[in-house]
Image 1: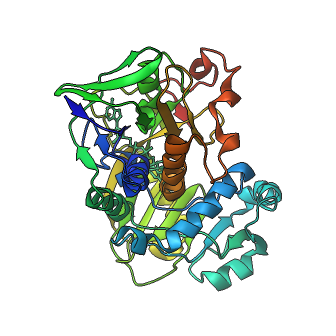
Image 2: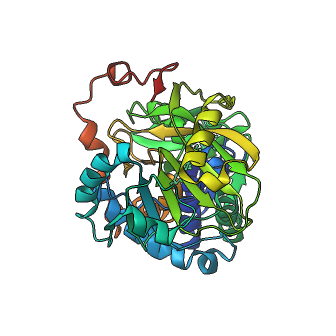
Length: 385
Ligand SMILES: Cc1cc2nc3c(=O)[nH]c(=O)nc-3n(C[C@H](O)[C@H](O)[C@H](O)COP(=O)(O)OP(=O)(O)OC[C@H]3O[C@@H](n4cnc5c(N)ncnc54)[C@H](O)[C@@H]3O)c2cc1C
């Protein structure tokens, strides 16, 4: 039988980051994915580091992540295309009142956010629509290339001895005497005392294997890139309901608009048809950056994210038989992955973390009703508009 000190379930950016930090300490790590490496949300993300101004308890995690991003290429030995050029939230008149409320929450974090008027926003980005009336700006944050980042973590953890097994769904977890003892795949069992559950939308199903609950719902959303354009802006931008960044090659890479709730299962890939939402998101970008209006779309794709009931991250030990740890990134895990993986690795090895994660535990859902997805209208087939 194969053995591992730690089995990580999920070769997305969270699982790969955790595997990297664990392998760096000398742990024998096996990463299992039911599909291919970073084929799900992690390879389909827009690439922002979310600073989490909306939820100041996560902003502290974002600050750790930002610090790690600045030296991540050197740490991993591979390129991520990290672009540390800050962030702009632009508001049309219909968004301005809400943005001023949002700013109050942003101000509770340690990041230096500024509320600016439309003219100052246009001085930062002359291509911005004349209808933009105000913005929040910060020099903190940035964006990177999701595929290259996931690839960098995958190569770096393999360089340090971790093994990644693709097309290896976890079918069950064996326990004995109140402890995890092994993980079962179609190719046999891997004996291990520790499972790190980074299965994204499948995290709830992996937790159920040891009789525990991790509340997570899956939603499908859309992203796209235009043909390359000359350099327009370097920061990560949000406005008119879409997130837009310009890639190193010049493409506008964006996503936004509504998303659709779906169900996922243990072994198969969730389907990702593209839909009329593409037209909706493309129109929003043309309104925000009028000079992009006639630029052809090059590629569109769907991706599936995992959302927790309060939209905040979970990083915790899973109650029940000893040995399972989990993180669910709630739709903003790409940028935070360097810090989440490090925190999970520390938690797994020492039972605690130097990174501020105490308020991100599962106990906050203790009173969640069993049928929360129904009550929230987060069941498959519904749209979140
Ligand atoms: C269009 C889009 C745009 C986004 N933009 C951003 C952004 O700009 N910034 C940001 O921070 N975040 C963004 N996100 C969210 C971000 O991509 C995710 O939060 C992050 O990738 C989560 O990483 P993960 O490793 O937890 O999950 P995933 O990448 O979903 O990986 C989970 C893995 O677990 C595997 N798995 C599931 N069940 C099993 C099983 N039974 N056995 C074995 N393996 C299993 C899956 O195959 C999958 O590969 C975006 C997401 C999408 C879809």
